[in-house]
Image (cartoon, rainbow, N blue to C red; front, top):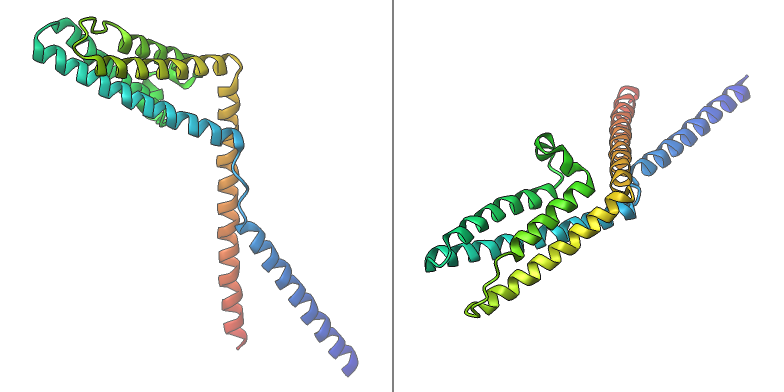
Length: 204
C-alpha cells in the first residue's frame, strides 16, 4: 500500500511538474509576438513619405501666399494658395488613417480617391508659377513638391485600381485581431500565475 501511495504521489508530482512546465512553455509562447506584415510595413513607410511630401507642399504654398500678399502682385494667387494649404492639410491628416476624417470624406478611405486628391493638390501647387525669375528658389521648391506629390498620387491611384488598398485594410483587421488575441492570452497567463501563487500560499 505504501508503495502504491508513493507511486501515486510521485505520479502526481511528475504530472504537476509536467503541467507546470507545459504551462510555462505556453506562457512563454504567448509572449512571443508575430512578426509584422511586410505589406503593412511598406504601406506605413509610403504613407509617411506622402505625409512629408504634403508638409513640403504646405510650406511651399504658405511661402507663395505670403509673397503674393506682401508684394501685392497677385492677391488672387494668394487666395488660391490658401485653399491649396487647406486641402493639403486634409491630405496629410488622411495619411494618419484618422477615422474622424473618413466619417466626413468616405471616398478618402479608398486609395484611388486619395490619389486623385493628391494629384489635384500637386496641380494646385504647380499652378501659377513665377515667370518673372525673381523667386527661382521658390519655383524650384514648387516643382519638387508638386512632382513628388504627383508621383505619390499616381502610385495611390494605380494601387487602388489593383485593390491593394482593400488587401491592406483586410490585413490591418487581421493584425488587430491577432494583437488582441495575444493580449487576452497574456492576461489569462497572468491570472493563472496569480492563482498558482495563491494555491501555494494556502498549501504552506
